[in-house]
Image 1 (cartoon, rainbow, N blue to C red):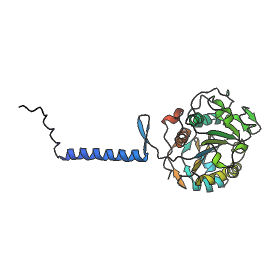
Image 2 (cartoon, one colour):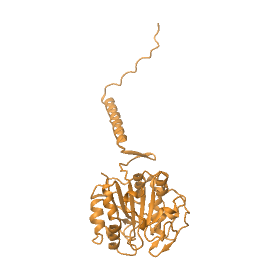
Image 3 (cartoon, helix red, strand yellow):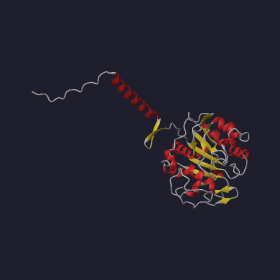
Image 4 (spheres, helix red, strand yellow):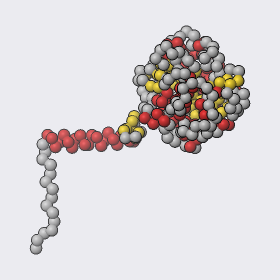
Length: 306
């Protein structure tokens, strides 16, 4: 009787080439398995990107104004920023704004695009519908708010009032961000555990160093956010301090400092980052639903997390 069994496939010869190919395949599979198990790689478009980010309970971002990196970092006029935030946190030594003047940078930081803004004029309230940090955080079922110093009242859409300027508050430009999520700074909670998942703090035109000194802004951060920064270290939370733009004399290189839980104290990174990288990192830290605009192709901030 004729057998229908197929002959066994000949084994690959035990040559150096064969052994190398099998070894490389095994190593590659092992590395992929380990990377997957620890969350080292995450798909981003068509490429794999290193993340390794923590998952903080609260993130507070404070945006200051119109100063170059060397005007603040290392300055004796900013003792709190340097001796506490930089010394105990992470200093991004090559952080850059996107353009000039102020307003387009705020839109870039918030939505991954300048949204066509080229000046500091007031916008049509709710005129934009593009995704942004707030809409993405809310879409993920998490909480968002902004705390705006000198804003006349919660949700006020006034263009300016005393030292308050709407040009520093891009959330008003988006119809997918609830107006009532724009708080006055007086509403910033003293019980920090009640803070939203993500919030922005925008000091007024004096407190943010725009109209007043570096020393004034440094003292404002210490007095108004210093207690939160201390709390954040021990309560799985973060404070991010950045600037909109420089003084137009330093290539738009700005101070950006990250402080709090899971940040390597006294660390620095010389990787070049800009507002889109900061936005991308905020989205990924918070578990937001998506990446807005240019944040979609930006890299996360790495090398500062423990």
